[in-house]
Image (tube, one colour):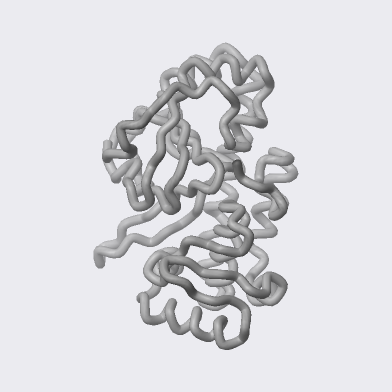
Length: 255
């Protein structure tokens, strides 16, 4: 498996700033707490490469974000979904110890909590309620993937640009500041960097946002929402039906 974190790791017994873990009952969290470790992971670190044995579940905390990338024959990686404090990556849909299909990369660095899939499987086996929460999250993740496929097929680059910025902003809780470069945005969109830059320049000319070194500042959230497709809303609505309160609300502050 790819190197994931620096050497500063520690046990995590208190509830981390991850909504999926906070959704668990006290009894279910107690099954996992002794086995949780905390890492500070830098942006662009790889959690998994295709073919890696999936041994660890990673829970982004606070403003941290991970992304799934699918490699193409032309050498480009196309981002499919972002995962923040609403969920986890690695060994969620399956039971782990299977080869990873996609690349999983840290998009925005920060705190992550890790758990060996064997520990998670043992806890699921002993607790139907814990198993139910993770099965529901797997359903929500699958919904994200379905929605991303449809979005890429039918929506314009401008709509998808606005959607990705809003999605990142909601998860990072950055009060309108999104640590997203033009190159990272191009990867999210599956287009060349120059195309992504032209879209950003158009939004900037319209007073919707500003660009800073390594980040985007959203000036007019309503205008940005008006330019976005409704894919984020569809995903959030499904989360609310299946796992109420887990998807980050815009007013939620990360800790």
